[in-house]
Image 1 (cartoon, rainbow over the protein chains, first blue to last red):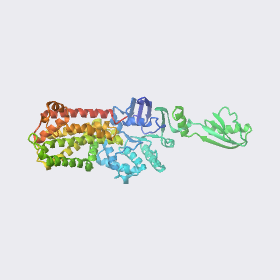
Image 2: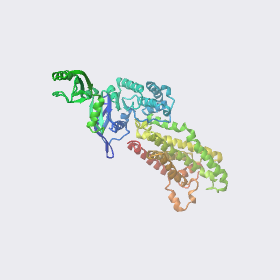
Image 3: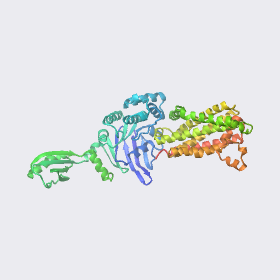
Image 4: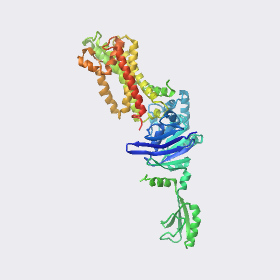
Amino acid sequence: MPPAIETERLVKEYGDLRALDEVSLRVEDGEFFGLLGPNGAGKTTFISILVGLVRLSGGSARVFGHDVVDDYREARDAIGIAPQEFNVDRFFPIEEVLMHKAGYHGITHDEAKERAHEVLKTVGIYEKREQRFDWLSGGMKRRLLLARALVTDPDLLILDEPTAGVDVELRHDLWEIVSDLNANGTTVLLTTHYIEEAERLCDRVAILDHGEVVTVESPEDLMDRGTDTIYVTLEADLDAPPALDGYAIDAWIDAGRLAVQVDDGGAVAPRLLRDLSDGGHEVVDLEIARTSLEDIFVDLTERSGGIS
Amino acid sequence: MWSIGGRALFKREVQRFVRRPKNTFMPPAITNVLYFAVFGIVLGGRIDEIAGFPYVLFILPGLIVLGAVSNAFENAAFSIFHGRWNEYIDEPLTSPLSYTEIVAAYVGASALRGLLVGVIIGAVGRIFTPIGIKHAAVLAVTMVIVCVLFAGLGLIGGLYARDFDDLTVMNQFILRPLVFFGAVFYSLDVLPSTWRTVSLLNPMVYMVDTIRYGLLGYSDLTPTVSVGVLLGATVAVLALDIWLVKRGVGLTD
């Protein structure tokens, strides 16, 4: 089975601006893949190329082995996309909007109606099926975008910031729906600003910044790249950190506490306590703070010159 | 043959204007009732016959063409531009429709609206003046060709428009002058020879003349030549439509 998405040195230029700079990514069939990055990193440009809303300037992109330019019909048929912006036909009731979309994918009228009802029930707005898009609440609109992406029963579901600006309940509903879909074999490509979302849902994440791939890893591996900070409260305040050679990456005094940055806080803590005791310091309290995925994300994008 | 997807887009486009008759079919019907009332009843008796036809009868084919092509153009231009404006044109664009199918759906539906408006105007005209059909085949073929031609032009307008004002400008400054200098309200024979020659550059002249031939049996030009010119123009415009959509002009970044 070819990969769900495979890009090779994908480039998109807008005049002098290089929005995507030789992006090579591979998303396996059935994977839940996250695309993280600050605003303007090129996430939406990347997915827009896959569905034909943006023309690539160089390189290549394939969806399940179908080139998005040469075999665009096969590639687009495999994709269901829920975009960030509301781009829904306002003329028709939402039930018909979904039927139209299914129709464009070659699904007959009766089956399209059946599927429209099914996905409206899945996202919880079936009772609104005869209303037009403009009359829906913000959360319902977001649900409709997901329903439209699902009505063609896609092999690849692309979600561009699906939970941006939605309440906690809806966010959890959407997470549950897409997790179930992924468990049943649908490949999911998710772009998000919410690190927690990527950490919770994704098998792997790619961090994109300034149109370049900074890294592709599982959230767990990314977390392993982070450091821990051990905060130690001593009976007597220190003016300066003691020498902790061999394991401390850095050490400093933070609000009266000794702060020691290490690779693995759990493994190092006993040795640190012993060294402090040997140095005549009485330890009152100890706390290990793990670096969050968000911290790692910020660190990686700052290092690549992303967030200022 | 046309796929299910292409038919689905065509059907959506047709439903869009069929479900809003107050916006699509009522205005041309009312406008033409006014035309016929003024030119047929108020002024008609004071204007000499043209080529042996009462004035209202002479201008009726032109009014049918005017209404048909205006609606075909406007429908395609508005539908494409409105879809771009609200970005819901992404729905068909992200679907497995061929570029030819997309053009066929938008142009076909818009041409259908033009044809229906033409029939409505003809029916309204029939109330005011006795009109028959002299050459049904020529009339039908020409109506289809001109509606497709202007739907195709409307699609180009919809792709290039940057705002709703642009659509108005296209109608007021391009379409309307072509119509008024297109021998709708006069015969080409009344023009000096230079202006008659210049008029032949206006596609509207061929359209009005051929429709007039189909309805009244009278023409200033040779109908087969006119149909040939219009058919050639239509094929060229459709080819341009498909090329523009394939290139993503106005549709993709």
